[in-house]
Amino acid sequence: MKYPLVKRLEIIQAYVKNEISKQKAAEILRCSRRTIERQTTAFIAWGKDGLVDHRHSNHYKLSKTQRTAVIALKTKDRWRSGRNVRDALHLSVGRKTINNVFRREGLSRENTKRVKAIVRFEAAAPNDLWQTDIMGKIDFSNLGILYLIATLDDHSRFVPGGRWFRTQGKIHVFQIWYESLSRWGIPTAMLQDEGSQYKARTRFGTTDYEWYAKQLNIKLIWARSAQCKGKIERFWGFVQDDFVPEVIKAKTVEEVNGKWNLWLARYNYVFKSEYFGNITRISRYHPSERRVNQMELQTLLTIEERRRVSRESTISLYGKRYLIPPGYIGCRIWVKIKGNKLSFEANGEVFWKERLRD
Image (tube, rainbow, N blue to C red):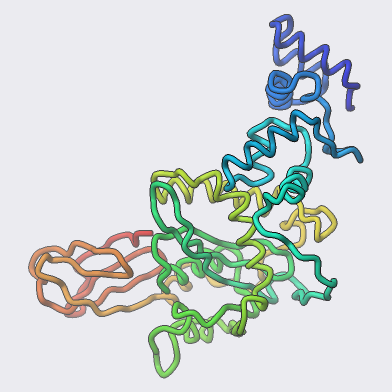
């Protein structure tokens, strides 16, 4: 039950004055304690206007003071998204309202031109087609450039897997393959561009990527332009608007990926898609019936590389240096990569194991 503004104002004022407890206020208004906290913050920031909830009404309006604050904050920090500005200012409006202000003031991320509506292709069922791609060169304040590699189901826009890396080598592409396929099963087809990660190095007369796809009976479809990957390209735009601002000052890749996992869970299970009639992506998705157990998949997706051990007793692998035990300087050794595990072999024997670094 939604109580009138006067009633909510009375209860929040009583809570602010310590006349009633947070739990008591929540019981009276029949809401959660988190809602009481949010409304209290909005009341302190904006007074009575902060308690006017526009999100479920037809009146998506900001007061003149609130509008001025939105414009000022966006002008100061152009990286902020509509959701970020709304939360920072404790406003009770939808992010679309904030984005409309950005557009009218010329502060939006891009000047969107209205185009004639077109009929877009969509796979008939979940797992009929996945898209995979790399979002590159996102410059973090304390980390430098990071890359996001992810897969996306064409039918539901559900994202089976994704992670941030310091480099964009093919090894990371296969890591995302392993994580996505081991958890959600095998798609019928995969759409990707012709980047070097997918076309590098031959195996038995074909590329590694094509060879692995053949073993898993996945049909490969090559995108000839960015428009062919429109769904995952739009997902990249949403990530840049909604997620990147939250972690732009992160200090480690682990911190970025930790927050990414939480954000991705919300994207798949909580965020509602207006394109599908305001429902969640998980409601249109289900795991593939084609499954491979993790051990078999790990063995199948094994990557083998030959490396020479340097004078410093190290090898270089996809932009990272690994220390090798003494006794192998100058030798050529085999590096086998299974999932996120590395093993180093010489003369047919494994002499060292390590975890693959991001």
